[in-house]
Length: 99
Image 1 (tube, rainbow, N blue to C red):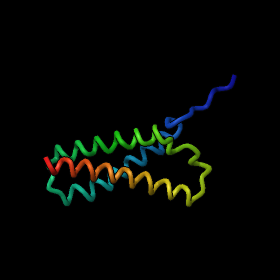
Image 2: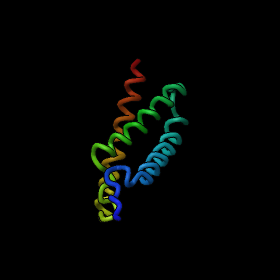
Image 3: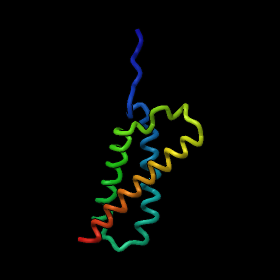
Image 4: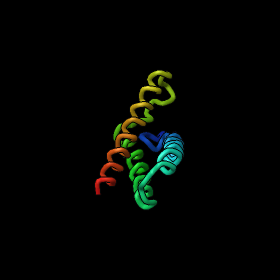
């Protein structure tokens, strides 16, 4: 009679897709224009970025309670999410540059 509601990160999959699209747009606008990396290195970094975003969301349950959080708490969590994502990409690109 009643359906069990979806729980976990699949409940807000649309938010995650939007996050990844915006992150990839910003990444492509900044990195691709001003880079010495090859296209293959950039494609591999995009794949790493997308996989990390999904893993980060699954592990931390980033979108849990997204509809009930206040603006400041949402802003703080978004800054942490983007900061960690940017840190991973910087570390990955630094690793590629050293090879």
